[in-house]
Length: 276
Length: 292
Image 1: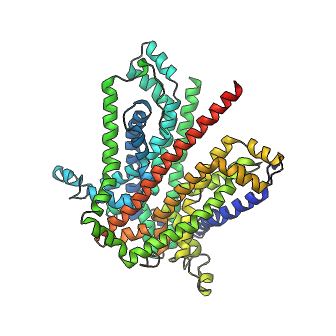
Image 2: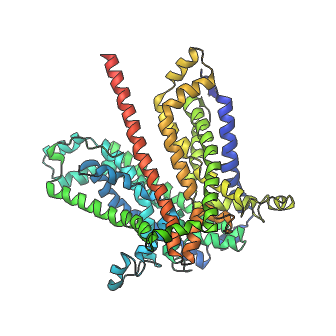
């Protein structure tokens, strides 16, 4: 294979130079520092750092809340995406634009706003209080924040998939006597399943690494509501660079593992569907 | 996005009641999860009236936080825009070995969490980092200073412009540019008079997104800033400090300004999408008339 196909357009050398230089300086060099730092740790040190009791507790709350949040988003995001694509109603474009709010709102702003409304005296919190439900400063609060920031990922991945569904398939199913519910589960859901999984994975991955919108509502109690990202910062503030790095690497590794398994599941689904 | 609404045959449509229920659930959920937090920001900011909210910005530290945020965006956005244009030209207009890998690498910052994005710069330039001792000997401060904030923000907003430009430039193809070149235009002239006008809306949107994130970033900047009042505090960091000191009105006033920025970004997004769709429709119409 040739290294480069000839093109009549100029600028290959210049743009390649600019791209590689900026990429190396801003992205590759810093990430290499992470890898190098990890390499200076012995396996024993690394293992001790990432399996400390407080660290394990932070994994449980971070990954647990992120998973539940992504699950809520998968269901509610589906309803929202379906309504926006299939059901005309006045103000639909405005509602559609609103879906991106968690993307656009700085995370610190989302964080203090969520804390304000879910705390004891907040707009929603004071309804929950008499029911004995505490949202702010509990794992429930962490889950609410992680649901908030993950929603657009599911909706925005599902929308194009729902738009691409061929209505002929649904009409055919209906004309063959399938009920609407049956058509939904046998025709529509399998058709958008890959997109739904992608949306779920994106929302989950984003939630695992989220910091700003969570630290205010979580209350940051060690062993209870302390998320892994915050623990990394705590270790950095104590100049424990090695411990912070070990945590960062283990968090990245787990996220990649989960994303990889979801990709694998998606691949299996697409393949099985192709054969059917 | 989502303007869909293709005509669906009645058999493949939900009954009236189900559709009403879907709209109700959607609106209810979005109102509860998105609208209520947004409204809370403004209500809390104005709780003690306009004057109290405005007073939050006359504070010296608040003013310097606003200034620092503007400064960081003014450095980062042009740099990443220039990079985005170069990367999009390279990846959309040339075919070479390693192209796919390069595309993946450009997206890499999206996969790294904000706190880790800050951490990597501490590992490089922090006191105990790789270059820490050298920097200290030469009296250069990067971490807990403005350069660190700029670097972390560059990392976080790295892919935005390139990501908006690349799909559009690939879609448009290089026919127009090839024509300009064959008519004797120079490479730069072709770029400024042919390429740029064709991608201006996507470019604008990429810049807006990049700017919004640069001004709003919290996690990464929080790690490298050191939170020195009046010196290394950006607006989001200042919101945190005020909030933790129970100065709620001031915290929410600053947050409201950032929320307005977010709303502006959303409005720009809708506008640009509408523009791009119209551009596409016009292009299609032209093609059809030309063929008839």
